[in-house]
Image 1 (spheres, rainbow, N blue to C red):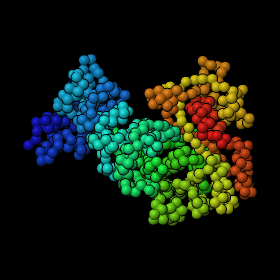
Image 2: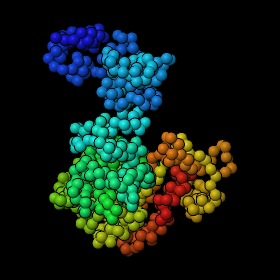
Image 3: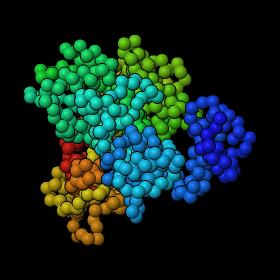
Image 4: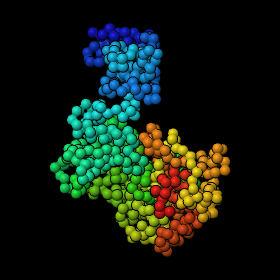
Length: 586
């Protein structure tokens, strides 16, 4: 027998014209034989949409309806005493104070018990507004993550994404479990890419890498080290008894609604085991090449290279310089139904629909070279190799390009010119390097100034000279005559403001709540694009050194990393200190 509430909800939906009587009667019969409400059944079976149903109920009850809720609509102080588990289970969320009461978003306005509980917690009358349940839960995740509330953190040993319990919902009270999970939660809140757990002489230090820079986070007594390491190993399915050998594993977690993949590495040191964890947000949106910080000239060159029918494009730079992100952005740009694109990676960091991606596994002899060799039998148009590490991989990449394939890969060198000599050092014949290579990009990442707190200052002549800028003509590279390289900076976010028409004013970092006191928020790239021209090919054939190749490329108009950094400093994107930190070789 159906409940009076289900009958009332059915009546509302029929009157609103979004459900017919026959379908309602069928649904009431089904619901009477199982747990759950009529409304949940209709929404789950997609008979009605949640927006339609909740909107109709709100209209009948004379309540406001919110189809969307912005995290900024929620007053942080209203959730301080409200447990996140209660809020998500009941799909209720205080929004703002309203007169003598508090507006509370709820999915089920009939649930007077939940509304009474919030009224008791807040000590204020509540005014209910109706919103879709999934919208409320999504907003709860966002506002609790932003506020840093982690009282309810607990452990999860789940391994598969669809079975994960949200870390922020768990209620385990074990101190070590809470401490380790708080570590993950805080890392996500700070946008950290890595967590370092380091045994020191008398304590254990924790550092986060945020925007490429390590920061001290917390310290605990060293007596807790074995328990902390064991907890991490259990999550990563590693051998907790093995403390003498390095181990590698992975952890799958869900934090504030986000699935996070964590790669774990442990190594023994004289002070105890050390752990480094790399965090990958599996929901992170792939960058478009327009979002990577390319200046117009670099964008034009890179955009043209990835549309070539064959040849090798290399991206060089140290670990953590965004090489893989650049390659992914390039692949996404050319990923169309008429192209067969295959990648072999270690590991596959982001899934791209329509592209065949292979994860290397040396244990079964699935390496970059063996994967690349197999790809040639798969009729590919474009191949991406995660990294050229050895002669065999380099040889197959060269042969692939010469037989009509576009090959993208990375290689570890300090600059673009160094990649050419590195391939020759791998015993690849210079004539093969010269004929297969079409472009090499070196890159670094610099932190972007926080737009909320950056402040202007007048740089000294010495600072400008060190940056490579002519103090007497800032928009022309110091010591060179490259027309137009800096000219765009004068038109793009120019720091030569009306307040200071006669002085060159740059920006520096300050720090505020929005950037967690760092002065920076996010990163952008500095780029150096070496195009393989006839003159460069001739130098490769002569087995010339990288310095000679680089000097020739600069004479031909190549913009090096320091110059690209300088024009981004002049445009107010980053600071002198950031550019000097990553471009000392220039």
